[in-house]
Amino acid sequence: MKLNDVLTIHNTLNRKIWSNFRLKDNILNNLRTIAQDFFKELKLDGIEIDDITFTGSLANFNYTSYSDIDLHILVDFNKIDENEELVREYFSGKTSNWNNKHNIQIFGHEVEIYVQNSSEPHHSTGIYSIKDENWIKKPKRRNPEIDLEMVKRKVNSFVDMIERAEDIFDNKRYVDSHRVANKLIKKIKNFRQSGLEDRGEYSYENLTFKYLRNKEHMKRLFDLRDLSYDKELSMDGNYRKKFKIFINQDDFEGKPGFNRLDEEEKFQKLVKRRHRRAKNRLIGKGLQKAGKPYTKKPYRGRGKSAPVGFGGT
Image 1 (tube, rainbow, N blue to C red):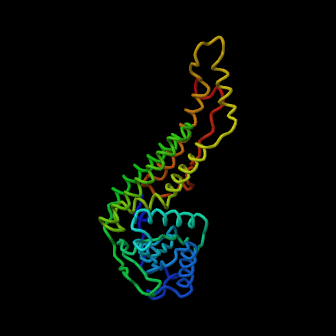
Image 2 (tube, rainbow, N blue to C red):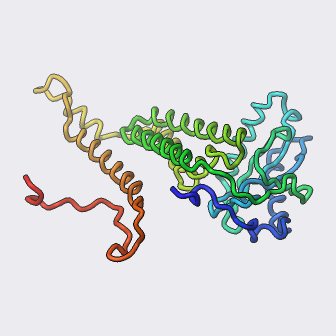
Image 3 (cartoon, rainbow, N blue to C red):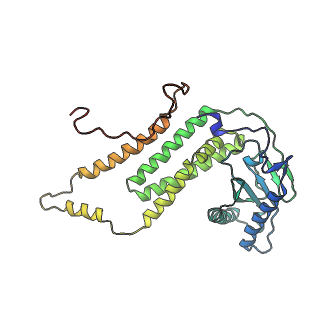
């Protein structure tokens, strides 16, 4: 893992979006329309938007090609209901549905909506008010000190947890894999939030999350959660299972016993999956520079099995 994998500091804001520290008019108008249309569909009579803000790494110097346009709609939750947590869950469901339904791209960056309580503190170092067309918190370029080794350790730890959750799914324990995936998603979110509140967006917790998101480990986890739920509640004719039951009821065998073929298949799948992960993780860790005679990238797939009779008995 290199520093560029978790953090890139540019000399300027993204020039496709900003001009002399001002949000370009066409982008500002688009984002304002998106936020207002979303809120209008909620039909919350008597409730008004306090502000619409553009925040996150694209409102700062640490943007990447993976960065989303974080569009925050600020609303006073108390005006909707005194139970703020209930209101938060309501908006969370509405924004989640909207973000899953739409894929609005602005110069290759996806717009993601979030409804924020007006009284809620925001930990980003760059916040631009679309309503007032001015900075609430103007970003400053700096080279922060990053604990890269800590990020690496945390990334490896979370990736290992995700792989173990996938192993549970592969063993067809769908209820358990759904529970573990949900728990892990919550754990990672809380981990990130604690870093934001303590040390801000350059904390190793937030950078760990960004790496997991950029390298699509979070996508794997969300897909695992959703697929586990679907498998858990699906009903169909499982003929393989029925066949095993038929074998287990053999008159010559009083108890089910050990199904060798089935157990070998599970083990082979496990070995194959872990081989691919280990190879991807280990390739490229050498410090030597590319050059003769090693001018090509190493093959990441599994090698073909040797023919019968080669390699010993």
